[in-house]
Length: 219
Image (cartoon, rainbow, N blue to C red; front, side, top):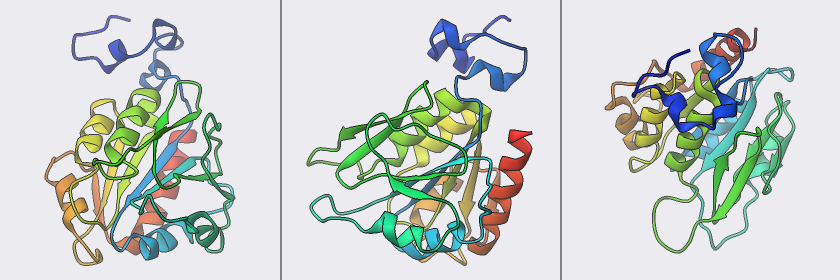
């Protein structure tokens, strides 16, 4: 299989570019991974996306909600009450598994590794946003390729815009919440401005889209 200069596989270790000819086989993580990205107004949005998802969803879910790094977070506990999926706070070197939700803790950025694990790094005192959606999505893109799904929900700023470009560059899919149902449309709008978004959906339609997409990808 010949790689062109623009082929994202040149970013991966040689061992990752093996296997059968399918595009998904060029990437080390071979099951669907969904990244839910949110900021201002994001708690209610996350409730309404996670709530309808089935307990047997064939995808791992990563939750990135911008949080104050100086304050303890109850985000994982709050989400666990609203979903049938098990929810836990991500720890360094945790393994992603289909049907589980990992929540990024405050003051950390999360990276996805080729072993289907996550790495946590200190966010530091300065921007980017914490946790950084762009860092998360860029690493998700080069490890999961077409199995990656980015979902950009309500929020201020433009975090996630570069990450959406990375996701689609590597064959993944991106969804953005529509303006009518976003409490703050800046983040979804910035993602839509890339012209790389596959679907722009009302908030209450996103869970069904995730279920359909991940079921197809896992088949």
